[in-house]
Image 1 (tube, rainbow, N blue to C red):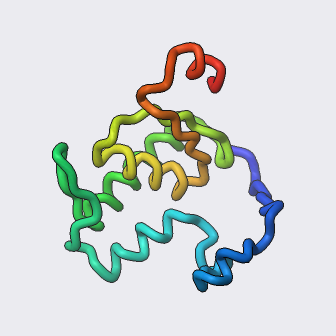
Image 2: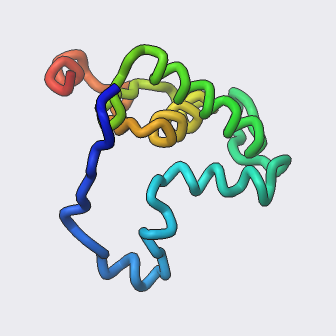
Amino acid sequence: MSGSISIVDPLGLHPAAEVLGFDKSQHANCSSILFDNLERNPEALAVTGPLGDLTYAELCEVASAWGRAFLAQGLERGERIAFLLDDTPSFPAAFFGAVRAGFVPVIRNSQTTRDLLEFFI
């Protein structure tokens, strides 16, 4: 893999973030939103739905597996990954795993037409 990739935020600190009290410097990677709960609430329910439930500990474990799988495919950090997943526990796990590993998930709706999907790819 190549060296460190510098990503610059062209928008800087958005005024809405100030109102919410969100300090971007404390969350360099949005996956920290999930992984911070691993310590605080490991057995609390993180994802629930008709296709399954996951605690924060389970979701972090599955997300880490997704991140390792993306890295094992030889992808470079900073690369975009097209996501076309159903609304199941796999979706947040794959999303947070990709982000945690340094990738950029590009989310596509499973109802996307073939022509539009081909355009995005």
